[in-house]
Image (spheres, rainbow, N blue to C red):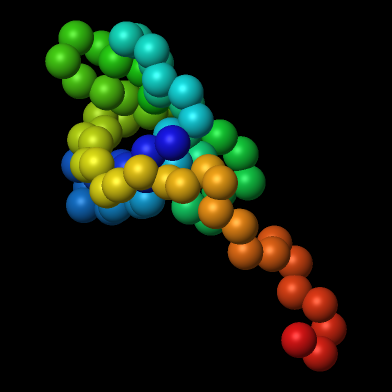
Length: 77
């Protein structure tokens, strides 16, 4: 999997993990989001589900075999 940065024209940037990509769509999980987001390609441009243009920046590969940190912390530790 790839880790990318979604950069909006407003100046907002969000890191995301790419789950699936085709020639026309990309399914990502933005950092801190509860659900996935689908980006669509319109010509040479990518847009989010609301139609906002998004620039994509590549960060790195995600090691899917690495041990993930726990999603819930236990009391006292």
